[in-house]
Amino acid sequence: RKEVEQDPGPFNVPEGATVAFNCTYSNSASQSFFWYRQDCRKEPKLLMSVYSSGNEDGRFTAQLNRASQYISLLIRDSKLSDSATYLCVVKDPSGGYQKVTFGTGTKLQVIP
Amino acid sequence: SQTIHQWPATLVQPVGSPLSLECTVEGTSNPNLYWYRQAAGRGLQLLFYSVGIGQISSEVPQNLSASRPQDRQFILSSKKLLLSDSGFYLCAWNSQGKETQYFGPGTRLLVL
Image (cartoon, rainbow over all chains, first blue to last red; front, side, top):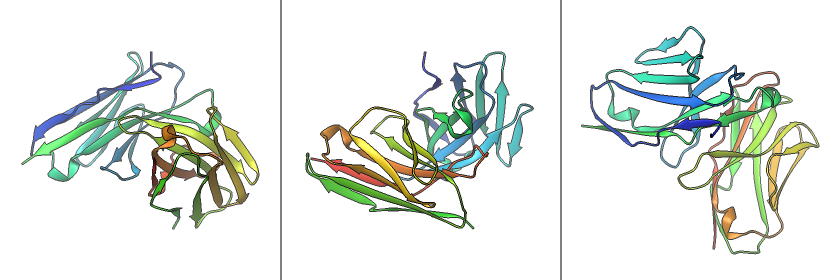
């Protein structure tokens, strides 16, 4: 099993729709989780951290389910500008604070 | 504020030629520095990380090497490029003790 797994998509959704992505991780000792956004041919940029109690930033909501070992990202009222690849990132508990593992990403395409 | 630079932005090199990619960070001191490679359709693969001048940790065996001659300078090198070295090379940094990583704009390398 991969350390971090994501559905590659693409998820094609109309503007205004709500869309959710999941990301599963294999190491139950993982402590820190993040979502990054990567536009085509650009560098990844931090979207949000994922806190144990769940957290929200505008239209974006991130949640953690430790029992099932997955994190999720919910995007409400999708905009065309949300089209990108969303990378799940999990802190490697055995690698010191330096190491994180990136998922391969889920591609989102918001359609007019 | 902190900024991270990479150059060149794109590079086309013949097989067997040498490589030198440079990354510099401004606005911070003693950062952790990272080199990642992202091959087409694949996730980010950590190649090297450094916690200080002259301190390099290698994550995967390969024909690449890294050096950190100055606190905020990180260099990725190869003596002889392979076709499989093609990809998007990303430099990243974070503060000591922090997990969130910030990426430079990347170098797109094509080996022919």
